[in-house]
Image: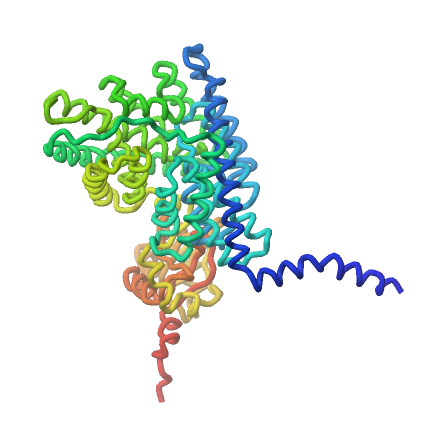
Length: 580
């Protein structure tokens, strides 16, 4: 008798949800447009709060002219406390935020959790306020993209639409963080999406403009830096700008290799030490800050001084070296913060040094050092972040002076060329790979329309445990029709071993040798589900294997299945024929 009474209640309760689902089916594009405007406004307000929190709390924690012990104690305490919170509660909020955003876009169906958004905002704010010299722009990208992801999923949008919202939130964050709406659009398309012709261009532009308007409404019409108007004194200066590009490219490579090398070493430490690792960065920053207070924080105030020619050459050289060491150690040890701001700081100091030396040698033919500090910002950004178009437009928007474009293009192009030659893989791609996340390359994204591994893969029914000996593995695989098998341990798949590898080891008298010793390589042969079968064949040939593990882009050790040579041939209709 109670069922008829409960049924109308269920219908009444679910009615709004059904109506909303019908609205999404009929007017999804309009809902997406409104959501874009909402994300732009919300992200703009959050970034403003981000800026105010980091600057005002930093001024209170280690005020100018304050006791030296503060400059030592505050970074140490802040890095240790935030290190524990990041380890215990917000593991996805470590680091910059840009690689994590790209991982969510390409490997996690656009999913960024609300706890990660909150943790990134809180931990980064506290970390930067305590004087750790990392940037707020990269974390703002993850916060903006995360907010877009949460809203899109809560409103029931399709996964494709949720993924499309991530660059929308990222563009809104950069527009408010730098006060550069055009550069924000380019960064979202050039770096996050990897396609300047992406279909989300309109939404990205709209969100960027909305966020920029919110920034203007809350903080006024002040640019990030106040710089003198640019003037070309002599055509000879173009040679100096090219020299600055060479220096910027070399410094970018040193910065990138040092950061990646140090981070790789920190990642090798036992997991139980992860929460205390950020202390290494905090301790180094505190010791440096005791003697040189300008090392603390993002340092945009000191960048402004260099841009206006108010900083001595010796101090710029000292800050260039100290900041490079402090930033790489802080980031590599696991503190929350980005490399946007530090790259601009390092570039400004480098440009100021080159400009000062050139002006001293050729005062009649070379402009003031402040102009070179300005160009140096874009030069280092292009070399480190590998977003040359964004760097040119960003500096142009900061100066609002079209005349600076040509020197910027010369210096940025040289820096980008040298950096890409000496450090082949972009920094964000390597950072993601160190975390076991394999982001698709531009070539892989272009091949998405081809036959993919997912269409030929199958379940991994035959696997070998890493603790097995060579003799045990040969005995287990004696009747197998395959010639190579995935090897797994507690982390998941860690490599591939072939029958010929096992037989060779047996012939050398290593029957009791563990398989983990045969596959001891962090970059074992594998493929991902969205890669082409043509790529799988090439990798099989290079590795001399007839079977490859198919792993997740979000976790290289997560085994999704296997793809065998015969499976690939069957998918093309050229499988082996039964003989008579």
